[in-house]
Length: 327
Image (cartoon, rainbow, N blue to C red; front, side, top):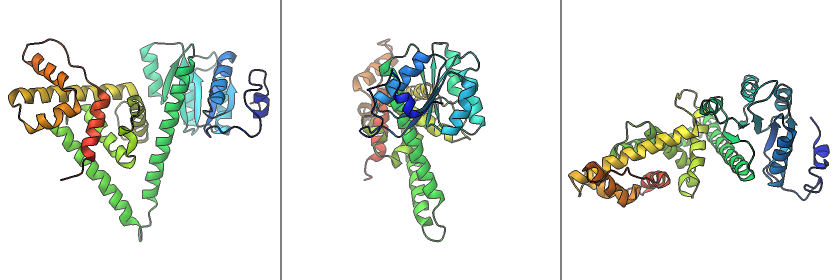
């Protein structure tokens, strides 16, 4: 691995980043593994130029990279899927067996859905297609940085509870656990009122509700919904007893199916009794009411169009409903 000074004095980067002082970049450490030198240089330049973090190493060989990654302990490893000596998936497996716990971003020109799914199953955070696009690279890296921040927050919360003194502060821990359990109970009750308690996506909503209890702005601060799916995926990876898919796309699909089921349930309720409290309370808050009416018409056979929903609106409404002060 070549030293930081040598890398920043290379012709490719000279004049872009000062060697000492004057630069305040993220403390996140990156390691890049790709057999194409041009791709390695491009990624390094993007990371440094956009102040996303520090590149602590690069390599064109997955086998050689493993030892350096274990030695430098980067927060994020960006690794190519297809390399001549050892592919990216095997590199990831070997690093995990060696005890590396950082995040992975996969690069590849391969667009085969099964291959991409396999990469997610191995634990990658995101997948970037080649040829590289500056906007996509920056967007994905920032999403992974956000996920790492959440992981750190959750770890701190769990560590705090676990380390409470049994003779003194144990009551504080119990109060927090009780509050989270009550939040879970309320979220499940709301899923029941929305008619989605048996849907796979209902558990995703419950977990989001609990996480947002510790981080109040998680859902209602205008966050990109895709970042929520990544945060859920990160949470599920930490819970080894859970068997559900941790692919962010799969999480989004589960939530979308749950929202559609709720819309159909509310439309059915509205057809039977327009004054039903559930219909009055939820129909225009969780959905655009024009879509509710369209679904009611479809159920009556008066229209054929399938409803369109805003998943962002549905998720935000779910959390806001739980956050309402009790009367």
